[in-house]
Length: 252
Image (cartoon, rainbow, N blue to C red; front, side, top):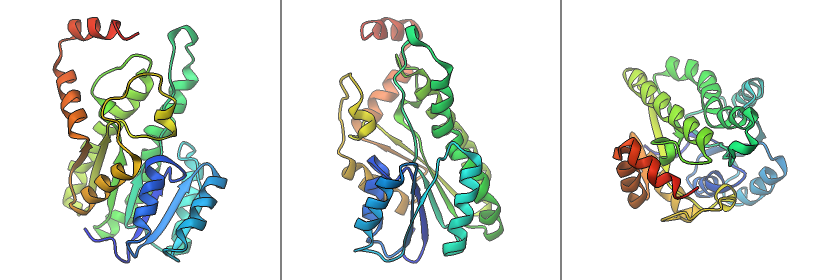
């Protein structure tokens, strides 16, 4: 896949992986749409990127708000007329404690991590199907394989995203539409900075963005990294429940 002269959307572009993706894609001679909730950070990024690319469009959007997604989608079409690649990267992570259980944590997490993907796909698909072309890149996580302590909603939302994207990939292949699932391990960002536990094989954000961009160019079905965390996640997925529980109890 070549990015030249394509319109590429990045959600969650104000920080972390999304921000680095925007910086690296800005030099690809493409029309770039950067979107996020935090308008001030988005504008700062926009000012930085325009020195490399004069076809940058920044637009505020909360992916968990269906109406906001619809309005943002129309703004992009009004500006560029088309979206070729949608990198649906926006997400949140809320550390949970059963002693302070609150269903709003789950609603917030699923709103961004799962429905934030679904709402965008709902707007993208009609035009993609009409053209028999387009690429959907959904960012999930290697944490989609099990329920980790204090991260139940996060793991569940990422598992839902991964399974949803997998089914969609199979269905859309005959229409010429590509669906790519991105599964990072630990990547240094505002989100992971809040974690109070050891994060093995923590990657720098710019390196993670390079891996993702290269994977999209190669049209991989699944982009997962780093390999050490991929291996650990596969092993964790094979551990019997009783043993997994015993190990997990030690890290409460």
